[in-house]
Image (tube, rainbow, N blue to C red; front, side, top):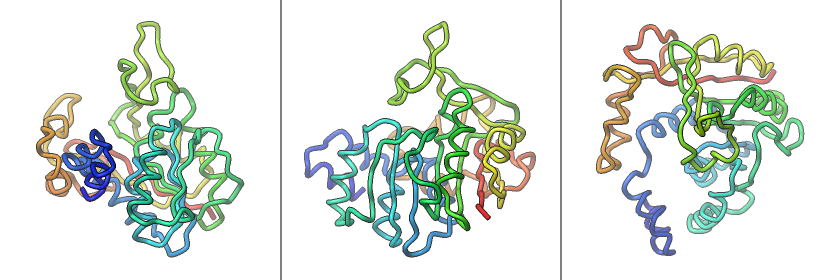
Length: 263
């Protein structure tokens, strides 16, 4: 919310009000906590964010003494986060923003001690998610750790939608004009598309869901009005499950957490 005020002072009204109304939304609050808990960041770590929401990168650079490169396939975020980095007095060597395609990262082998990618891989069409985890493994240093979150569903599922999202130009469309939006991974998908192709050692696979099953394909967060924005981190703690080893024990599993280590 302080970042929202900083943006308003600099006349970035739309983004500023957005941060004030929804500072950290329902699912992001969980993903941020999991990334911090599981990555085991240490002072001086070289960290790569592959396409995740950028708020966590700024927080890590400011609070934990790590050096973060925050990336995305589109440049929508670069000017805003350069502005916020200055507003929070984070040195340039602690946070760098860059436009990168996760399927073809420009970094040298073994460049990073930690890599995380939150709710990103599912949006890469065709075999791009598999190519991306291979690239992550390549740029991860020996002894490093990678933390991923992706949507989970008991069976494989692919969602297509109108091209109304910012990376739609980097996706693929079908004959009807719909654009590939995301896949929801089954447990088999997680192993075959992400874990095994990475060549990394699986340290942890956990599943998270809603405590309340609203039925069908809809999720509880879809019923949360924007006015609940400031309350959503608290609602997430109340309404989401803790990570479970077996998704079958959850009433409605919706998210998979994957932690991979490089020997």
